[in-house]
Length: 246
Image (cartoon, rainbow, N blue to C red; front, side):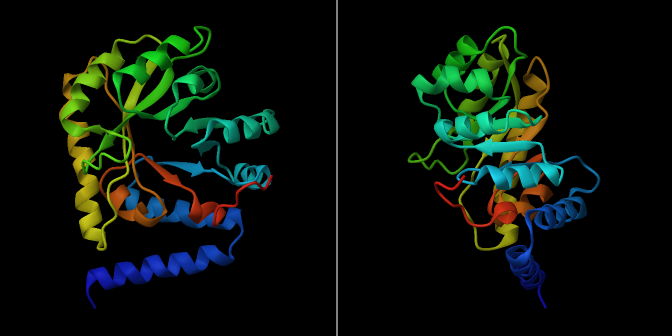
């Protein structure tokens, strides 16, 4: 049996398992899978809680997670208010609207979707000085899908230099959502492009980036193999998204 067939069997088996598990059991299974492929390198599990109810986030927190990602500010704001007693670390992973920049910077610890100079300056200007610098990642359009967010790889070094000069921002790394590939090895090679870009840029920066935000439910394993340090997992933790439930 080929390695690719074995990989597909493993992936399908994982999918079947998580359907019938509790959130805590799913997190345990995913954490084991991360450990299996990370080779003792630290990988942060970021729970993508978009459209998930507050009760599900509480359950994930009780199972050991503290990092949660949201794509829409209004939805995130309501959850943050409901869960303010918990020591959660909130990540914004959606498109940034100029009129929402101030609210995002005042409440979030991370923003993964900086893809142009204007957004970087907005976030820097609105970040309260009494708070630590906002952790940010540059979103990279690896496949030049111009209908999607992200900056072309060739433009990343210049944007990285600009961000590192902004006192209220801390450039932590790069983020990407490449095109899905049918074969795991193809997905691995695709994701590896972000790691190569990361390694090429780092020596030329004033301080070192430490974060590669890549990998979701369907490409978790190839992302870790390619060097991801933060995987953004939603469906494999919470199940299918449910709009409107709290």
